[in-house]
Image (cartoon, rainbow, N blue to C red; front, side, top):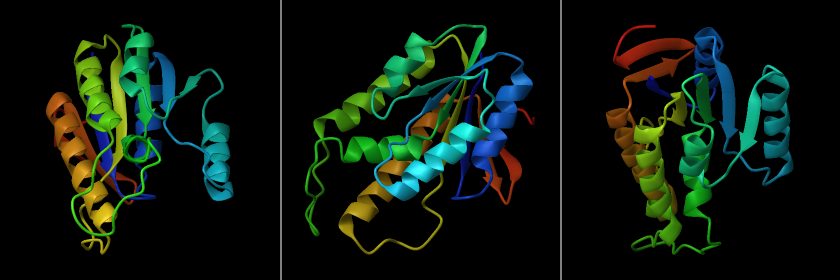
Length: 185
């Protein structure tokens, strides 16, 4: 089993690259989508992604319990593609409907670290090949708001943790993959 983390910025080509890895594996693909249709623009993005996926792929929509789904669909004959950890992290951050202060320490929901720990544990126990897609959000300017800085920090920590657990890490920029860890594709 191979675990791959695919990182990149918005519209970098990371999802397309991850989908090519899934197709090239020749395995049954389980696509775990973490997005939720919170507004009409996001609903349109979800429809666009759904329409572009091969019809034989199994699609699971899971905004929070990602570790549970990895274990549920775990099988050596499968590749599990998770798109994406960034939306999942946002779902966790706002899972309790908290109102965050503009200044000071950001109180993270109890579910936040619990689900991240479950994901890490499931990733190490999963018998499938796994491809995780995540945004690299720390390469721009420092955000102004406390919640945005908190999100950027937590995304960076999550990406580091997942990269440590994965066999391969690939950064995609302008549609071009750069292998950061592990064998070249």
